[in-house]
Image (tube, rainbow, N blue to C red; front, side, top):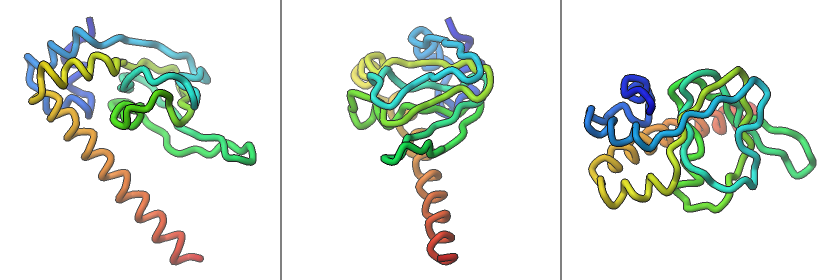
Amino acid sequence: MVNKSDLKQQKLFSELNDAELSTIAEKIVSEKYAKGTTILKEGDPTKGIYLIHKGKVEISKITPDGWKQTLAFLAEHHFFGELSVIEDRIMHSADVTAVDDSECFLIRKEDLRELEEKAPAMMYKIMRAIARVASRNVRSMNEKLMKALISY
């Protein structure tokens, strides 16, 4: 079982109390990836939300003309895969590669669905954390878009 103090450091679980962390800890699977390993490929079945415990990952997509476009680099305590889970997608929509030796905690989509029914207050806290990160990402992308438009 994953250590509760390690989970408390994760942005996704920062608002959870000890009892809620214990509930989540029972459902978490720890996975290790060597530097350069593909964690997810676009089109892979959606497994759940990955939380970066150690290391760094790159999220990217391949453009229609075959070029790799990096969307983000994420480091410890960040998470990915949440959009596929929230949108009920069958498949992931981007590639994720370990930039460094990395360890990720995985909470499976089935376990999240179960928590929605059995622990809605806890899921509210988790969804609020996802919304905060998504909001920051949208604001950041808006700023980049505005700078690109102004410099055009």
